[in-house]
Length: 239
Image (cartoon, rainbow, N blue to C red):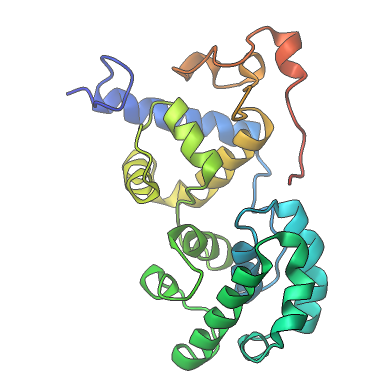
């Protein structure tokens, strides 16, 4: 039976095949796709991901070297001077709320997990400032546990691709998980995010330069002429 959120007349099997073919093409297009937040440990990635809310990865990466030099353990963050921490992360925006989340998260790590970042989604999402998206980023990139990261780029692309027209991130995560093999979830997330940042932009996607053009039901949303589309392609690394 056709799915209501897939292109007209497309069967479930056809949708799965098309989604997996699109992912394979993106794998060929972005062989170096990876998390664009700089980190060395699970804790650093957790903190960086909290900071990335409403902020670019580039800006976060500018703030974290001094942050990570000063605070190296959960205990360090838990006992941080609030004013000092706020000043270090001020450039990432919403710095007071993010300070609350980081200190609260670190205190919870110390109280419940011995200062270590847990390896399970159900535990990570109990931490202050940590939702499913943040948890999946940490699991996939710090621990190698497959996870789907539904950020704004990811949601925009799966809607345009006709994989789903859901807007709820949790529903999107579960639907896409049924289309793509579990082993590919983390890298597929990176590839979609890279594609959203470089070609499939929110306002004017570079349709004429898109390797997925033949498979995308939203082809034509942006310029289809190759020369015009090429001007819209943005190289990384990204903000």
